[in-house]
Structures are given as structure tokens and as C-alpha cells.
Length: 65
Image 1 (cartoon, rainbow, N blue to C red):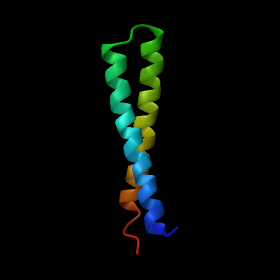
Image 2: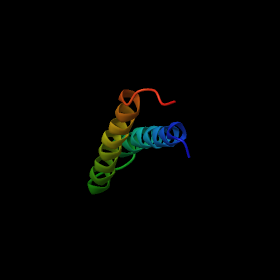
Image 3: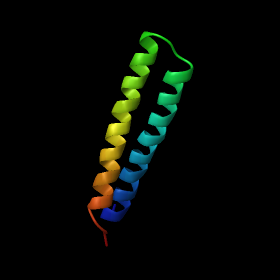
Image 4: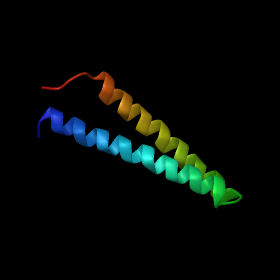
């Protein structure tokens, strides 16, 4: 697998984590109460942080040939 294809799959994982974070934050704020909302929002913000770091890495690593 080439470096370009590897970066593509890594960026897809980052985008998936960002979309998952959106869904979990909406779920925890509108549907859940108590400890379940806290646990869900914790996982949402962790996935938001990881997804952001992955996307920043891909963007700032430069073009791959």
C-alpha cells in the first residue's frame, strides 16, 4: 500500500471520529440524562480530540507523491 493510500484511509478514520463525535454530543445533550449523558459526552469529546489531531496531521504532513 502506498503512502498516499495510507493517508487516505487514516483521514477517513479521522472523519469518522469527527462524525461520531457530532452524533454522540447530540445524543448526550438531547436524549440522555445523568451518568449516561456524562459518559457519552466524555467519549464524544475524546473522539473529537482524536479526530481533530488525525486531520491536522494529515493536512500538515504535506502532499504525498
